[in-house]
Image 1 (cartoon, rainbow, N blue to C red):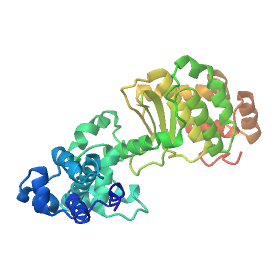
Image 2 (cartoon, rainbow, N blue to C red):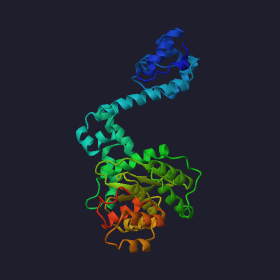
Image 3 (tube, rainbow, N blue to C red):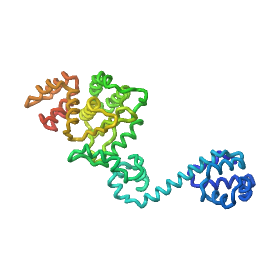
Length: 352
């Protein structure tokens, strides 16, 4: 028997059961083991049954008797076995929670779609996602989100889940940027590059290129599907000391995606703080949102020239294309702005 190869994968067997196998191999009885390590037979029996925890002192004594197996092996096995017991006990306790109410409140069906795990397991996984140890802590940790709510704003739970899912995606979607320092001046100097990337009408490709540029500037960029009733377009926060822009993709068009991104860049340049989370809702008219909206508009078009162009009462596709060309943007950006400003109907010019 090779001692250090005996680690059981699921750790359901008490450490004492493994010790018994070694004792049999060495031809040592429990009584003899008690004599060799200077312990009572009762204590030895309780350790072997798993009733008593295997201590560091016991492991050090044991390695002097079972000389091929170091104390570290027994201690590592015992720790993992006890962890497994704790997880089983936690899952058992979770069975007594109001799982149906938790599932409804925290969107289990939406978040864990396609995963074959029980409601109790989903409840525990949600705690991990939210980085809280119990649901009683949720309001104290995430209550501050309510400060930013509009009257018809999103639900606190949905927003918290979406933010947590975004954070979980940061290192998956982005390159490592620990050694890159974000500087506002660098971002401002590269704004034209972002606008050029927006002219690639293949959204996924343009956003991937945008993410690479963001990473070079010390910024994280994450896209994460929205959670029902979150009503969040995007967010600006920090991750490991770097600015992090999260986008929900609520609006599927290329223009709206890029307007949302430009909006968050505006927040980054105008309002960024490492300790704050700025949430952008669908129809928030707060001062910071107005400033970020104006930044996004100015990012794509010259304000004075657009103001003059938008005085028209009727438009043709050719006129829109000509104006867009003069602004070095795709026509759909002009269409989106005219629709937003109610200069044209939402079903007009979507083909150009």
